[in-house]
Amino acid sequence: MTEKINVGTKAVWSGEKEVLVHGATQVPVIVSVAYNYDDMDEWYDVAVGKKQGHIYGRNTNPTVQAFEDKVKILEGAEAATSFSTGMAAISNTLYTFLKPGDRIVSIKDTYGGTNKIFTEFLPKMNIEVALCDTGDHEAIEEELEKGCTILYLETPTNPTVKITDIERMAKKGKEAGAIVVVDNTFATPINQNPLELGADLVLHSATKFLGGHADALGGVVCGAKELIEPIYHYREINGATLDPWAAYLLLRGMKTLKLRVVQQEKNALAIAQYLQQQELVEDVFYPGLATHTNHDIAKKQMKGFGGMLSFSLKGGMDAVKILLPALKYANRAANLGAVETTYGPARTTSHVECTPEERAAMGIPEGLVRISAGIEDTEDLIQDLEQAFALLKENTVTV
Image 1: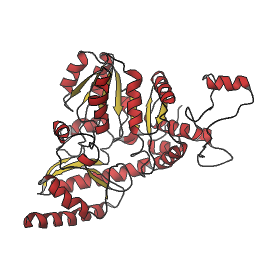
Image 2: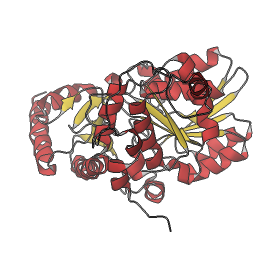
Image 3: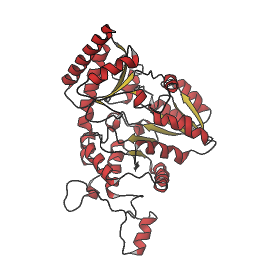
Image 4: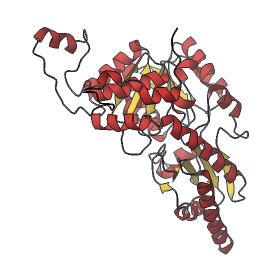
């Protein structure tokens, strides 16, 4: 009988044993660019993939392999390959499978960098892009029926945390002959496993929740071996390789992934509920709220609602410029998923690459603020918001 291991234990132990040496309990950082072989035949077999091993750092690395194996196990995948950044994971995956004349179907609310690939780069390659309103499952299905090479989903979305039904869309995508790709960065493998819901590939910006400490860039994609192999080949030739030191930092961060996510989503819900009660807040977006448009879908496909939320203030950016600097326990920065709570307007974080008109078309007002809840004590974060809103009210009355 196969032993059932829970996800928190997997985050600590999985994928490491093969790389441990000299009785060490932690994965070593192996920085060697090349690997020596005295046996020419063995060297050749490793080089052509007949035998496991490493020959050159741009291709593979033991420390990087341990990171890939850990994510692979957490996502329940057959294989995984990593990248220097999350955007490298996204772009390399798309460019591996798309060619001129192909068609991709996605949603309007993807991360700004992803959206730029859809609106700027793919059209130049004569690839048709159909972007549907996020959450409009019927519209997505209609576009899939017109033909599709890749169905690309992001759920929850960045920064409006909108939800798409992965199981429903994956079924329709496969019926259309599409490869179904899901960006799982916001949910993490702790709260959502898209492969179990029918997706073909799941990817992460490992820089965010997987690493969790805002000190290492990285990306990763997981799925069936027959899909990961061509992505790996594209990456090894084009060179967006994950650095072994970054891989080590990501590995170290992942050991506390479950602990962090549990506290982050506790804080996110408390912040969302607090913001709902504020008269100066226009809208609050968090899938854990019963008022969220697709709360029921989130409950069905997610084990928890995650540490990300967003909100908009009455008074727009003028109000944001008063509120955010007043916060004591928050970074005002273009990052998410870290142990520290982080606030940032979409116009300078997730969608800084887009024009105000493009953001408006995606339903992102200039005053929308993204919050990545950290692991601080909940009551301290709420008290911090209380004093910041008190200052905002004073300035609002003055104006």
